Length: 74
Image (cartoon, rainbow, N blue to C red; front, side, top):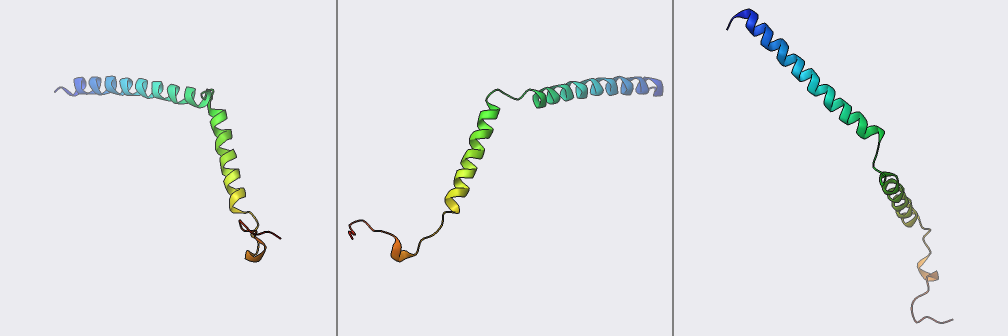
């Protein structure tokens, strides 16, 4: 292939790739700017579940003798 023709085709391919990259960047930026309407609710629900789980893990422990058992009456 002629060197000038090779240079021309490579420049054309570079322009195509740059246009494709620009399109993908626009799509990516649009997704970042406009999250779905339910995203805030899902995030809030997730953090609620995390905080509830942490509360369950950090419950104060009672001594075994003070824990009432089923059928024990004072």
